[in-house]
Amino acid sequence: MAAANAQLRWKRMENHQKEDDEDSSTASDSDSLLQDSHERAEKRPILSVQRRGSPNLFEITDRVEMGQMASMFFNKVGVNLFYFCIIIYLYGDLAIYAAAVPFSLMQVSCSAVDNDSCGVEADTNYNDTDRCWGPLRRVDVYHIYLAIFTLLLGPFAFFDVQKTKYLQILTSLMRWIAFAIMIALALVRIGRGQGAGRPPLADFSGVRNLFGVCVYSFMCQHSLPSLLTPVSSKRRLTRLVLLDYVLILAFYGLLSFTAIFCFRGDSLLDMYTLNFARCDVVGVAAVRFFLGLFPVFTISTNFPIIAVTLRNNWKTLFHREGGTYPWVVARVVFPAITLMPPVLVAFCTHDLESLVGITGAYAGTGIQYVVPAFLVYHCRKDTQLAFGHGTLNKHRSPFRHTFWVGFVLLWAFSCFVFVTANIVLNETKL
Image (cartoon, rainbow, N blue to C red; front, side, top):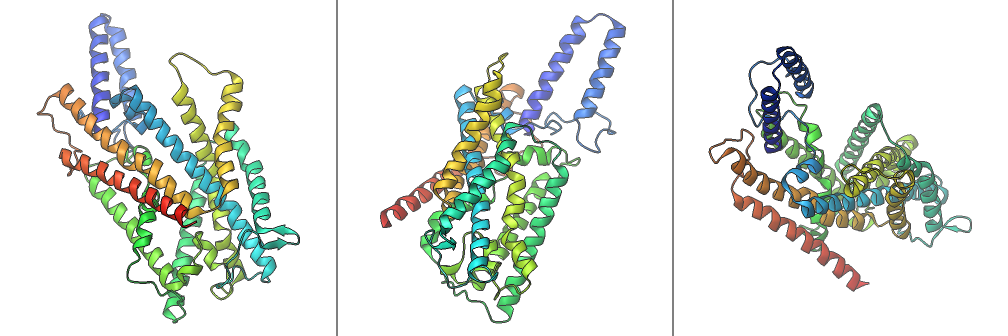
């Protein structure tokens, strides 16, 4: 991000120099400088507009997204591979969301009918062919909910989604409430000696899928430009991001360890919230239904945003300089190819663990490891060519040696191998 800002700033300085050389009018010169100063003030981070003095060449003031960085440092093939990678990742995201919401609705509604509104029983292993409502099987109810979900949220892919700030704030608030409730309930249950989990010290068969799940869980690289650019003081940016990751890791660890000691491993559901939709775990019906339907509320708000993002990436991938898309292609074809594949995947399977592992291991590994590693490598080469070897990037990484680029790529390859082995071995068992 810092190297990209340096190149953009250098190009602007060159353009301003050319304009000053070509323009002989003093009045127009002053008007131009005044306009440029206003434009620069608009592009600076929050709370930094009042500062004086020339900024450092590597100051992060412009929001440069990963797609723009790819176009700056990669060739045409690299740019296309980047967009292909992020498109596959967004497809996986939508498939997970499209499966999670109907699956939660099916589990809560079918269990409520079978068990007098007490949710999923601890020792009950449900099959898709089990009856739910009269002649309807559980899988039939799942498909009905999937159709309703698609009809309600699918049309958003054909339009633009804007002004979602308050919706996202509400979603984040609901997430924190749900996580806090689940951790507190699990701790109370363990503290009372009611924890049913007896996990082994280690189970290496779970390592294969752990890699893909971890990649998917820590995925935020594509959002960093939007998150970090508005920060006014960037002196401690590396420490801030490190602290953020440590807190996230601690939170994941607390959620995971309370889960494995609170519930038996063979009865632990992939959608963790559904484990609390039981009378023996949660006595209050309102809390039980809130946790059981929690994915419905939160995921449903994110689905249209990700669908529009995926549609726009398709448009960018096929866009040609100076060209425009016909109305049918822009308004029908792109939204259709955005919506149909994830819905078809969700129709065929609701195995969330596999969907998360595959999405994280393949597309997620590309966005989290491969693309950033190659971006760093190429931007360092371009920076040395443009500014010389003596130029110091104030935001340079502590892991600046080329060895770490290779290490990240090797780690990405390990994730790919482990998850592929997990898929092959599971298919062999079947």
